[in-house]
Amino acid sequence: MTYAQTSSFTSNQPFRLKRIVSTLMQHTFWLNMATLALLILCSFFYIIQVNGTASKGYAIRDLENSIRTLTLSNERMEVDAREAQSLANIQRSVKMIGLVQETHPTYLDASGASYAFAK
Image (cartoon, rainbow, N blue to C red; front, side, top):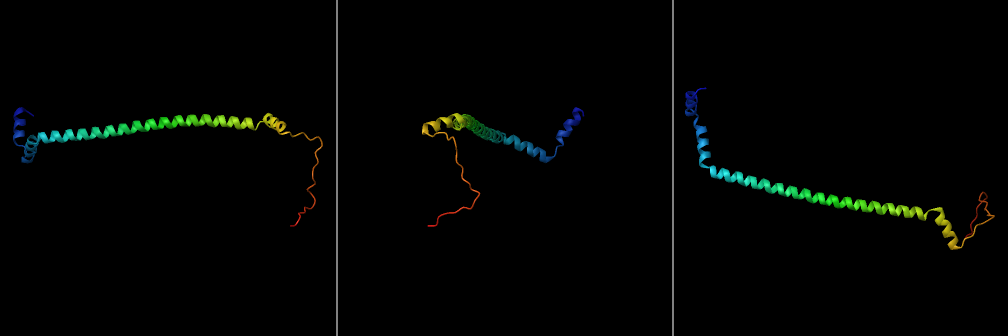
């Protein structure tokens, strides 16, 4: 298109387009204010979201620390339980209680009939 064609093209614009352009020119201040308000609102929601994410990150870190602490405590308790159930510990306990080893145990015969006393 040549310059003459473009200038005639702009002079033949529809009335509706001219009206929109003139309305935008008249209300430029309000459009700028609306854009600024939208920008401030989006910034506010962004800050809220980032703050929430950071808070959840700290909560997760605290929970991971408590998991490590509880895992170590659980391992210590398992070691203590194994030590308490060890044969050497049971033999020491038997001697402390005063039990003696039986040389000739006597077994009961339970294959026969069983009887109980009535009250």
